[in-house]
Length: 127
Image (spheres, helix red, strand yellow):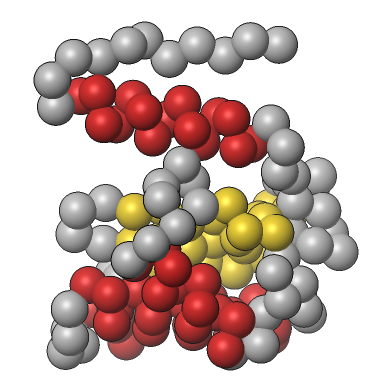
C-alpha cells in the first residue's frame, strides 16, 4: 500500500519531510501488548511521549512538557525532554511495561529526541 505526502515548498517542506520519514518508519514498527511503541512527538516549544499498544489501540502511558510537574520547571528544552523521558518511563513501569519499541516520529535521533530516549533508558525501560 502506497502512502503519499504532497511535496511542499518553502517552510512547509521540512514538515512534509518529517511526515514522509514517519510513514517510512511506521511501515516497519508496530507496538504489541508485550512490547508497545514509545512514540515521540516534537514541536518547537514542547515534546510529548506516549506508550501505545497498536494491536488494542490503547495508550498505556503518556507524558508531556505540559504536565504540571514539568511545565514550570527550570532548564532548557533538552532538560525538559529528559524529565518527560523519566516521567513516561515511570508511568509505563507502573503499568507493567518493561520493554518498548522506539518510534522517533520521523525526527532525527539527536538533541531532544535522544535526551528523552536516554532518560527513559536510565529510568529502566528497555529499547
